[in-house]
Image (cartoon, rainbow, N blue to C red):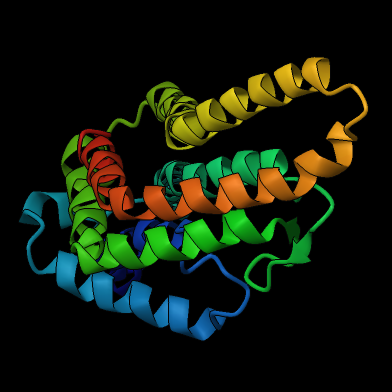
Length: 249
């Protein structure tokens, strides 16, 4: 391999991992964020981390071209896995909001999410926006930087990389997403269970009452009240999600 390529390989490896991580993050993965902005952020992170990584990790001279391509592909896979794990945990809030919205009767009230171009429910999107704001207000971007920084310690550049452990980490993030979604929606679902019991009793006591038409506005009102009560507790939920991300590696 030529000398100049050997000097640029360490920076290319850092750039591949950090840029793949940025592209997979829940906020920057949006289609509304221009790709040059994501690449520019990857360049900034590359310059930042290259200054602090130990010198032996940046020794890339004497590596064949084919091996360099393999190393770059490994770093891209590592960055995508880390970003996907963070994205899955972030999606827990939206999934919890979808569960709540379905109980409120908003199953058919789908809108297009401009960030992904996919259909979603307005209540889940609302909780997702509030959670994202609270996460970054609480310094969550520092946590994401620590996550990518710690990855260079656990999975060093051009070193041994356990793809099985990475896959297990992504699966664990998926399990955590379901757990956090149920934990977020649990109190509201319990409220709807109590409402269902009350409506069942009314259906037996007042058989002439149209329970279906009566329950629709009640479900919306109860859902909005419980959601309003739940929003102040999102900060504690944000801290719990941040703690899980901090323990990911």
